[in-house]
Length: 288
Image (cartoon, rainbow, N blue to C red):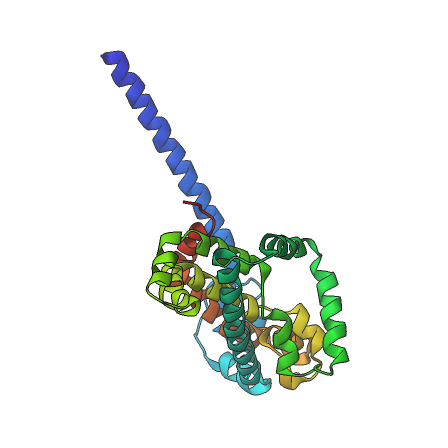
């Protein structure tokens, strides 16, 4: 009996040590990930004079000032960049979710000739390097004279094979009996999709929406390639322009303020919906 208690105590101590080491490692990892965001935000509240006078960087501003945020919006057209990005993000996300929802329903529930071959071909397209796709899209958009337009920005991003696959797998988990019952009741395929499949798959759809919003908000290569008119710059391109200008190189606190304004909405969005994202990914990738 005493030996059993000793073994149990040793096991408990080992588990406690393992747990402590795990949390210690996660804490260090969390600090490493969050520190750049903290450094960006705290620098955005420092005055230009304080920032330049620091021989050793301080972890907190002596006096909190909002002057950098005012400068970020007045020295450069940051508001225009944000508006352009909002238009691009909303339009692209709405069109994409409509396209992939209809396509996922067709592949998951309808029977038509060549369905499996078509879906396999779509998945095979994921193997094509993104650089080749960008070159093809650039040539096409340029040929039809859509450079420096919102339509040219939006069109290449209105579908996603990965999101289509994720939603199709989620739709496929819905029992066939519901579809057959809907047909017996005289429901159309579209009504069944909107009233049954979409509500059941809402965690996955919300996940796709959030991930697409983040993807569009952070989009850099394609907007940089297809637009050279500042009137159509997105925030990612705008920040690059600010960084390369004299304003961005000289006034670092104002630069940090501009980056903070751009970053905070996505951080808040992720923190609010992080549980839905995890739920949607797990539902989309689990059978049964």
